[in-house]
Image (cartoon, rainbow, N blue to C red):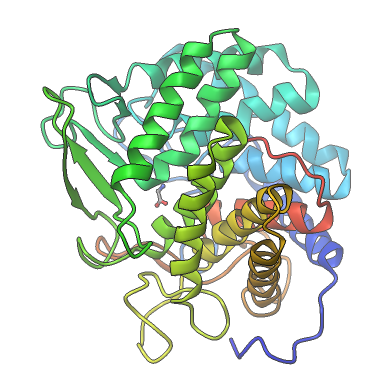
Amino acid sequence: MGSLKDRPSLDWQMAADRAAQQVAVNAALFGENYPGHCTDDGIYRLRPALGVFPDGANQGWTTGFVPGAQWAAWELTGAESLRDAALGHVASFARRADERIDTQTHDLGFLYTLSCVTAWQLAGDQRARSAALRAADLLLERVLEPAGIVQAWGAPDDPAQRGRTIIDSLMNMPLLFWAADAAGQPGLAATAERHVRQLRDHIIRPDGSTFHTYYWDIATGAALRASTQQGLSDDSCWARGQAWGILGFAINYRHCADASLLDAASRCADYYLAHLPDDGVPMWDLAFGESDDQPRDSSAAAIAACGLLELAGHLDMTGSGAAAGAYRQAAEAACASLVSGYVPDSVESGRPLLLHGVYDMPMGNGIDEGNLWGDYFYLEALLRLTNTQWAPWW
Ligand code: GLY
């Protein structure tokens, strides 16, 4: 994981071909079942049984990254088997939405944007379109008035989670923007915009760092207090949360065209970039630096790279070319680092695309392992680098 200096420029398509090979091998291994959120000793295994769910079931917040990675790998290589594999997941996601299977979460956006909006947009699959609209309806059930926020976790009457939202939720709003257009209901877009503005106003600190989660008073709608779930402390800056902030504010600008969101994304980016170690891949919390003996989170680097590229594209259009160039350069440097230092040395059954991620340090989950979202966003970063015209699914 040496310094970025003096590295030769990389052939992104070669990296993409290699990553797509791994996606294809894992698609053959798991079929229409799902691996766990993270690798276990470096290898993905069938998603463990949980409560009523058997091994490999479509439950939890990360299963959409499986078809998402397959769609991304298909776009990068044109391999039809990957498109078929991705379409093979639509039935499971349609059933999950129809039968409300583990749908008490804001992560419906991650789940259905990548599994079903993709299948509709890229293959015209009508069942996927209906499932994504159904998922958007389920997400709407989580909107709390008068705060105008989407509750992140738990049932709406869960006292521990009531009124709480989290920075990751920015990535779940594009499902509502998509549904607003698809169903001809502009009110859905207004709901998403309101949520995004609440996060812009409360989840970013004055120095550009971010809180992980934030509570609102459900009766008055007043913004109450911050707390962390996966970061070091309530007043530290969880690296992946900061990456969600960069990408989330920039991607929602695509839908809202509100310049304050570009400013929010830029503030998140500037803080993030000022707290990176030499190889451009952050420690799991930005409180830690190069000299601390702490694990890095490669997934945060992949998400942030997508965010920096998204932000740079918008800044180019608004006449801020110098800032755009710096963000693009930082994204390319981080991706070069991922390609040269974080990819397993060979393609083998069950391996991740990226090594060295952290899921949840406080809970001791997925530490120094690969994970499904890191793999997906690595592919998305490669899509953005190999095709500057790539239109996000978000
Ligand atoms: N969205 C959950 C996480 O980033 O861990």
